[in-house]
Length: 235
Image (cartoon, rainbow, N blue to C red; front, side, top):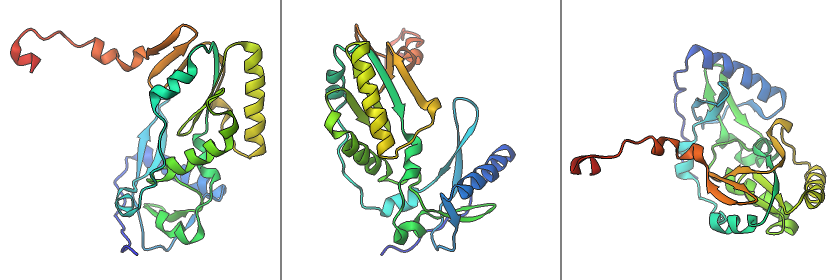
């Protein structure tokens, strides 16, 4: 029974305001959000994506401080890499959009409320940014994929990695998982799929038939560092 927290909307740049209006309409049309009269209210901010477009994010930091955390365990990364030894072909499915396929309990909907220049709204489906969103979603995907975990499937948060020793095996593995996702009505954008790739970027590493390596893109800035030439610079 914590007291509701409401914060004033953040100031947004004109391009962000335009994107906000567009994304609110899309979310409303899909019935993901609805108008709200909740005493709760989080501000909205935008994160620029690699392609230059903006992703709308709700700043739930005040709500997160009051939320009891779900301690669902993340898998050890070295254990996941052990599973990939010997694989030569992979496919990667990003289920990030799957969060919106999980409904929020009606009694909890008011707590998801957010405030904007264009009105006060609340989510009927699970939004990004809630402290337990990642773990709840990962738990769901792990349950769905449980028969195949550590055999030819790895689940890490909202990524599913399907790995195989050869192309024939991979065809069967891929068909199995796609049928499973269809049966469970878990959908993702086709553009987020990467099929039949000889090497895959996963958790900051590149994996191929020869082994597992640190992704060069992740250490580019470190490689460009100038070597220190004095004790002061070393410190």
